[in-house]
Image 1 (cartoon, helix red, strand yellow):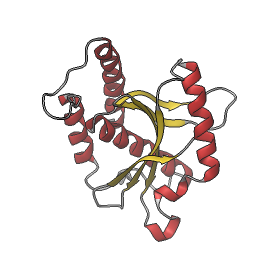
Image 2 (cartoon, one colour; image 1 turned 135 degrees about the vertical axis):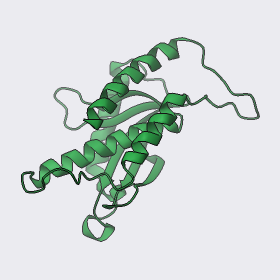
Image 3 (cartoon, one colour; image 1 turned 90 degrees about the vertical axis):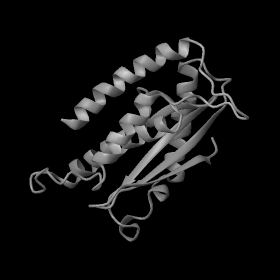
Image 4 (cartoon, rainbow, N blue to C red; image 1 turned 180 degrees about the vertical axis):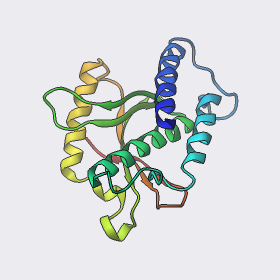
Length: 192
């Protein structure tokens, strides 16, 4: 239920963000100009962070009726929702989630602007310890990087933003059961 409400709010916030980008960007006075982070994004991250205070795994779901793959998918969706609001709180303007293109393998988890740079973000969430499966960052293999690079080039062609600077980020989330998630954002993690 909570994720359904968050998903509806994400769509509403995305549409509001598109309208906002059509207007002049608001700037903060000071030595460095920074985009003013919308209060809504901060408030939503506080709610999502509070909901994840005991980990991202769903302790209320009956474990016996779910397969391992279903649990992993549910954890991934929760991790991506957490990452979305984390990045929004940090000033990213998100323009796409789960971008896929027919005939191509894979998807890009999140696409957004960090300033004037398009950031293609791969989100990796782990609920187990490092020793069991390795760190979330290690899951982005060379093959996965190639898929992301191909999808990113297609995204830039499709939306006619080929001249825009871009980079690939990895957002690693470690969410041990019963503890608050640990987030690491690696900007420019690999080259196209």
